[in-house]
Image (cartoon, rainbow, N blue to C red; front, side, top):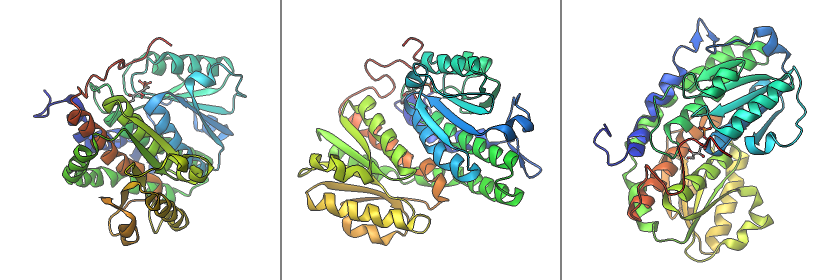
Length: 368
Ligand code: F6R
C-alpha cells in the first residue's frame, strides 16, 4: 500500500504530478475556467472587491502563494491570515468580501470557526478542501476540491501542491469573471498551469542528489531558508517541513529582511537554502537574491541554491545547486517546494525518525 516506499509520505511526494493534474481536471471547459460545486454566481464573483485567505500551517503557506497570483491576475486586494488570528480579531468583511478557506482535512477547528465568523458577517465563503463532505466544505458557499485522494502522512505534501493548483484556479476564475484578463490570457495562464504536472514528474526523477545532500547536512543544528516573492512562502514551507519531520531548528525568511536582523544568525558552516526566482521572469529579484547569497556565503554559510535549469549566474555562489525545470514565474512554487519536501524527509530518516508520524502532531487539528 506504500507503493514500494518505506513511508506513505514518500509515496505521496511521488504522487504529486497526479495530485495536481487531477485537481486541474475538468476545470477548463470550452475556453473557460469552471469551479465545481459553485454556489456563487458570476454576478457575485464580479461584485467581490476584497479577498481574505484563511488557513493554518502548510495550507496557510499555499494561501501566501495565492496572494501573489490573485492580486496580479485580478487586481483585487488579497489578505492572507492564519485562521487562529483572523477569528479572534474583528476583520472588516461584508457581502463583497470573498473569504477563501483552505483546509486539507476540512475539519481544522480554527479554519472552521473563521468560516463561521465570515458567514456571520455576510462574506462569501469558498472552501478549498481535500475531503468530500467535511464540515468546512459543508458550511461554505462554494467548494473547490483538491483531488489527491487521502493524505496519510501527517506532514502535508501532495495536498499542499494540489492546494496551490486549486488556488491558481480561483485566481483565474476571478480574473475571468471580472474581465481583468481577456479569455485568451486566461487560456494561456491555464495552459501554463496544465504543463506543471509533467515538470513536477521530471523534477522528481532527479532527487537523488538532494537526498545525498540531506544525509550530509543531517547533523546540522539548524537550517535557514530564504526566498523572495512566491519563493518566500516556499521558504516558510521548507522550514516547516524540516521542523515537523526532522525536529531541526529551521526558519524561513524573506531574503529582503536579511539585513534587518537574520543575517546576524549566519555563521561558519550554517546551511542556508535559497529559492531563486526565474532569471528571465523576475530579473530584478533574481539579481537581488544573488547579492544576498554572496553576502551569506562571504560569512561562511553553506549555500544550497534551488534555481531554474540553465541559470548559470548562480553557480559561483552555490555550494550545492538543485536545478528545477523552468516555468511561469508565478507557478514556480509547484516545483521549488518539491526538493524541500524530499530534503526534510531524508534528513528525518537519516536522524532515525518516522516521517509518517512526527511526534506531537495530529493529522487533523480539531481542537484549538
Ligand atoms: C504541515 C501540516 C499542517 C496542516 C495544518 C492545516 O505539514 O500538515 O500544518 O497544513 O494543520 O490542516 P488542514 O489543511 O487540514 O486544515
